[in-house]
Amino acid sequence: MVLFFYLKEFVIQGIISRSESKDYYVFSEKDHSLIRCSLKGKFKKDFNLKKDKLFNRDFASVGDLVLYDLNDDGTGVIYEILPRKNFLSRKAIKTRGASFRGERLEQIIASNIDNVFIVTSTLEPDFNNKTLDRFLVACESAHIKTNIIINKTDLAEELSVKAWAELYKKIGYRVFLTSALDSTGVNDLFKYLKGKKNLFWGQSGVGKSTLLNLFYPDLNLKVGEISNYTSKGTHTTVTSVMIFVGDETYIIDTPGVREIDPFGIRKEDLGHYFIEFENYMRECKFNTCTHHHEPGCKVINAVEKGDISEERYDSYLRILETVEKDMNF
Ligand code: GDP
Ligand code: ZN
Image (cartoon, rainbow, N blue to C red; front, side, top):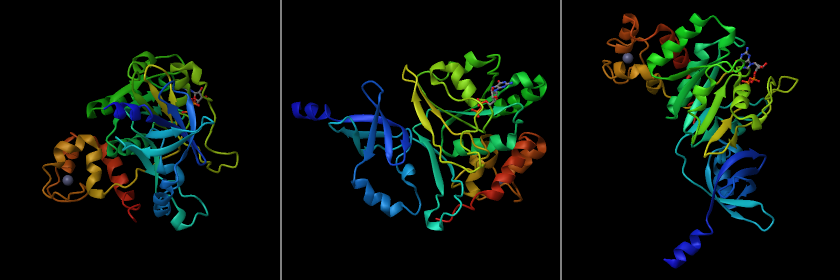
């Protein structure tokens, strides 16, 4: 028993905050300072087996709980990555010039997340429900609690925004209407962050950094920067970063994107990720129904009766066309 406690003293657990080439920066349990760690050699074997599917960064992801040893110089060595509670991913952007075997199929955004906030805006860029639905599908397929922020309410006619907010509320999402410019709705949102690991995700320019700076002025995130594109318009590899903001609260800031494709979804499963389809799907005549054309489809029936919104069903059909193109593994 004494020996057990003695050994436990030496187990140091941390959370990966970010990665940079081959290094991982890990929050120390003690004071949340960042320890620069490398991966222990034993991972190399596993990594080599998978390297046609994954890049190094995906092997351990931001948010992963890890066990590490400390070196005398203050750096660390990760020797174990604990099982993930969940992880969010997207289909990787095609890297120009990459060979097929080196091409990444799935890009992990982060793991062990309590809440995702998908940030959209009323205008600049225009609210795009199709884009929002793609983000929602990625989150639902990862089984993570998902919330919607519609920012820049100061720019839009109240009615047009409210209609979208009502639609998503009716489906079951928590929707926050905010303006980072005049702080509308910001306090209400802030309450939900405490004690949680919160990931903010969305298109570039919607105001994600401005909102986060309002919540946590010390973050000093750069506003108005198209940060993940260089001046030549080429994509650079900017990845997610987890930030500790006190009170057991973490923020995961993600690079702004133009569009995302959810990864690894089968046609017959897509309906589950449109959460309001669930009750109708059970009654479809065929249990392999893709709710596209099949006779006896209760989802199509619900759209015709106005119980499922046409906009959502239209999103569903568009995503249905594109999923499974990545199922080549
Ligand atoms: P991000 O790419 O999502 O991080 O967006 P930024 O936070 O960098 O904001 C993009 C631009 O939108 C900046 O010029 C911000 O000043 C502006 N912006 C952010 N929030 C609001 C808002 O609520 N209302 C208005 N009118 N502009 C905003
Ligand atoms: Zn159906």
